[in-house]
Image 1 (tube, rainbow, N blue to C red):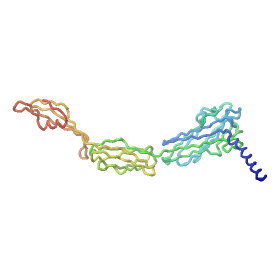
Image 2: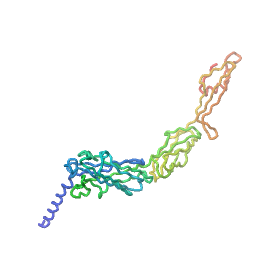
Image 3: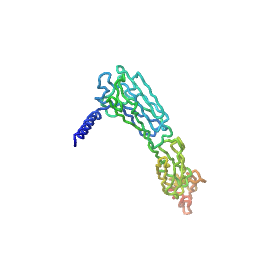
Image 4: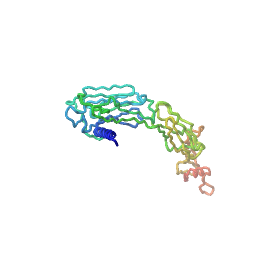
Length: 360
């Protein structure tokens, strides 16, 4: 290596080494929180972390504390937000600022606060665990265009976000102007994809019932109607409509089931691909009618009669409602010529089929 090249390499090494302490030096931080929710109103905290050894901090002499901040948050897509507020919270909520403003524009909102150190010292916790002390919060009201499965980014503006002392003479910037660096940590609002559910699950329906229904429910209301596709794994057991529509702004809709044979089938609901394509299944059991004869024990005097009630439940048709039907029957008592007791064959047959017992 000739002397010229050696001198060039040495100069580069000195320059790089001179930057290392600066890059590795402690930095205060501003953090915008994140949330995963399908709520229409979202509260996002904003934090400042006061780290020891920085130009500004609770560990510095009077006049060099963090007493003023300018925080600008840019959010995207702007159309997903109908309104937003940015206000003090946490350790600054009870303080009285000498100046405060919260300017905003489409896709951007800021909070500027200044506090007199002698009367309203911001009580930072030195070297608090990240993200530090809560100093403010953003409340976003989402618009109908905030679609499930999407993300609203929350980005701290590197040009306007800064921390200063009360007089504005010492500043910390993301760019490190004046040698005082500031770390920025961005956030996001994550809107979960839509899910769908069927209820009740499992479901039981009487054979030929005309009142059997299910409900399809999505996890959040959206700004437009959603057509939920429906199917039955065994149409010979029960059929369902091809789809059910959940109106805009609502989360559920009911649909009828047609149980046409005894057995079990699986009902499936599927959201459109544009709404995430989630599916849900529900087990439907179609059962036959049950028969009950009451009272279970009956006594009829010789030559007299006693009433029995036969109830058939769970058998319904469009031309035979309700599905529970009750009929009465008088059971006569008879005596044969030999003086022995003899039951009416019809009544005894009904009693045996209904598991009742007759005594005379």
